[in-house]
Length: 144
Image (cartoon, rainbow, N blue to C red):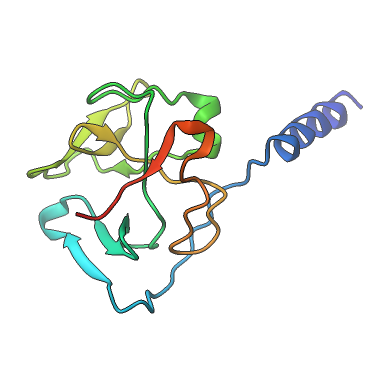
């Protein structure tokens, strides 16, 4: 009974907050502007799509968080439910504006110009930008 109550509370909290899990979806860019940005030697696997940077594998939009510090994520456990980190392999090669940071949880995360990169869990298909401007602190990464 206690386990059922705890499960119900967790499910209710997630439903109330609008959190979902990030879906691992693949898709194709039909805009004609799909352009590989950096993929060699384990460098940041990002692509330009519809004016923003996306993960080159799933084509999900990438975001930055205004409350982060240079080369440091301030998005903790609760934040990461809605804003999953764009994780990098430990041995990633960095170049130019793409680097990796070591998070407080010991994982590595891609960063652009020192700003850690994230996904938004409520983006359900490639190219969605549902998190842009959220809470006045989340922004899509515009393609340059």
